[in-house]
Image (cartoon, rainbow, N blue to C red; front, side, top):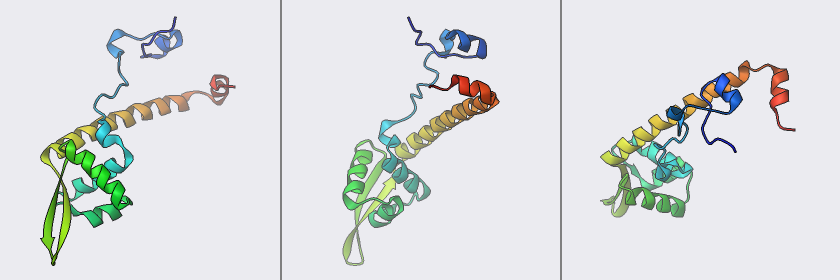
Length: 143
C-alpha cells in the first residue's frame, strides 16, 4: 500500500515516508482559482498597476484579449468582488472603466504571496535535482 504522505528529507524520501506535520505541504490552499486563470491573472496585474482604473479598450490591449473574452473574465472577477466596472460618459460617448477593489487588492496580494511560496519550493527542488550526479539522474529517469 502506498503512503499519501510527502517526503521531508533524504532519509525519509528514500523510504517513501514523511512526518505528519508535512501533510498537505504542497497543497497551496492560497491559490485562488478565480485569479489563477491566465487571462484573469493578467487583468488583475494590469489593474493593480493602475489603481485609478483602466479603460476597457486599454485593458483589452494590455492583456491581448478580445472584447468577448475580456467581458467574460471581468464578469467573473466582478462577481467575486475583485474588480468594479463602471460606465463613464466621456467625450460624448460612454466609456467602460475597470478598477481593482480593496478586497481584490488584498486577495491578489495574498495570492501572489502564495505563488512566491510555490516558486521558492520549486526552486529548492530544482537546486536539489542539480546536486544529483548526471549518472544518477539517468538511473532515476523513466525508461
